[in-house]
Image 1: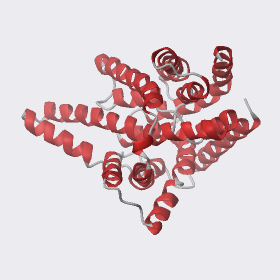
Image 2 (image 1 turned 90 degrees about the horizontal axis):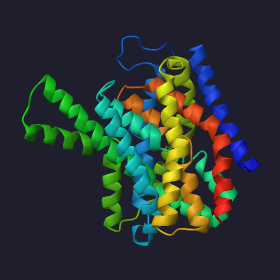
Image 3 (image 1 turned 180 degrees about the vertical axis):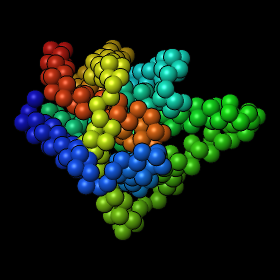
Image 4 (image 1 turned 120 degrees about the vertical axis):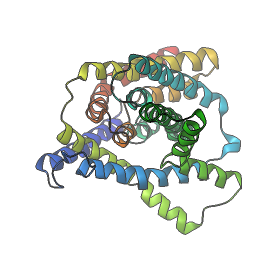
Length: 327
């Protein structure tokens, strides 16, 4: 692994450590024992979820060149990713543990990679400008695809839970689910951006600058939020199940991407290497924002992000060596 990637990983750990220290010292206040959502980690998570992430998603979808997307490469990546995500969701929902949002939270922890803080330097350092272009193309659809599908699933589960507590007709349940899915800080900016894009509109320079400025806050905010969450929530007692999800993320997911991309879509060389290393990335910080949004498994998700990032130092060279052997 190149020194560039090593330095990026080190910078991530330093940012997480700063967040942990601030949380440990309680410089931003104590955790809210009453559960009203006023503790600092949750406030920062809400700021990311309602302000910075929507700005990033809208700007991305409004600017992406839909007419020239490499659909074969995209399908080779997203089919196994979505397949594993739905499989984990189905198994966890069948097991029936935790809250109604637990299956979706565990699913996002299994498949949502750190495509920016780690993925971009890996692609740039290993594959150069051409590889980075492929990486950015996939990333442009990464969050909006996974978060949109998971939001639909979790809102449907929450609607079912509400209907059990206060029975409502099928029509009312579907309307509530649709409303909560579309009028949502993740899905709504994606839909708005796609409509803006389809109409052939261009972002005004001032608006583009504002959205770009807000979007750049996502990375540092989420990294410090990971550290703060560790300080407030601590290391989870049920960490063994979390380790299983991390292994699925670091080992099974890239294997599935490799198999389908190489032997299903015939990818080779740089495109194959880029999508496999995308699949091999550690858990991304958006998984924690999702967990905090639905108030479930915050500690487990935080631990999964930290552990997967540490183990990535060992697993990434293995995937690079395998890709080199395949040619």
